Length: 285
Image 1 (tube, rainbow, N blue to C red):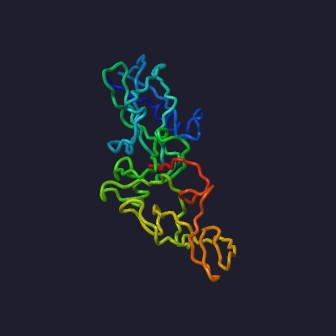
Image 2 (cartoon, helix red, strand yellow):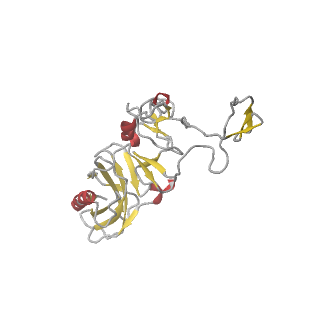
Image 3 (spheres, one colour):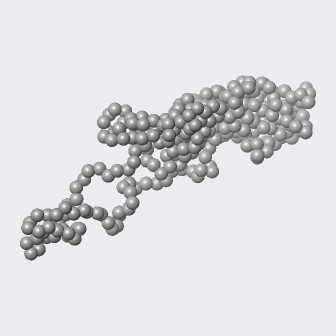
C-alpha cells in the first residue's frame, strides 16, 4: 500500500510548533499535529495507527526519541475524510530544528514510514548544558532532560550536543567515547570564581570525576570546611587557679592551659549547613 503525507500536515505542524498551539500549556514543549492520510489515492475510513519519532537530520541521522515510547504502543486516530488530529506530542525540544518521522498503519499488518520527514522549527528552546532545579520525582523527569547524577553517557548520538556544551568538565568517562554528566546530588552549587578572589581556596578545588576540570573552572568540587572564628569562654577563679567552665580543665599559677572546645547540644549536627529543601537538578541534553 502507498501512503501520502498530506501537505496540510506539514503546514499545520510548522505553525503549531512556532505558536505552540493555543490549547496547550505555553510552558511546555508539547504541540498538536494535524494531517491528512491518503492511501492509494483515497482517504481510508480509519481508524489508523501512528508512530512519531524525532531525528536530527532530514534523512539518515540519529533518532532522538519516540512518541509514544515504543513499549507504550502506537497512537490510534480516527479519520474525517482522511484528516486527523493528535492533540499533544512532546519530545522536549531544544534550540535547534529537528525532523519528525511518521509511520502509519491503516488496517495493514505492518507500518509504512512516510517520506520525507517533516521539519520541526525550533522556538529558541533551552540550550544544551542548561541546569534547572526540578521539584518533581526522578520518574517524572521530562523528555530532553537528564538527572545530574554523574552517569557516564556517549559523546556521540543523543548526547552529542550536550558533550559539545560541557565537554569533560565533570569527568572524561572512558577518555574517548563517553563523558560524565554533572553530579549535584546532595551538593550546593556555587558560581565560578573566574579570578575575582571571592573563593580564597580556589586552588584546592578538585575534579568531580576522573578527567574532570580542576581549580578555577566549571564543574570542580570543594569539600566542606569551617572558616576562622572565635569562641568566648568564661573563666572563674578558684583557689588561685583558673578553671575553664566550658571544657572542665584549667591551669595553675594564673596561666590558662590550652583546652579543646567542642559545641554540643541542640542545633549541632554532623555538618555546617543552612536551612535547605531538596530538589532534583536536571541538565538539558
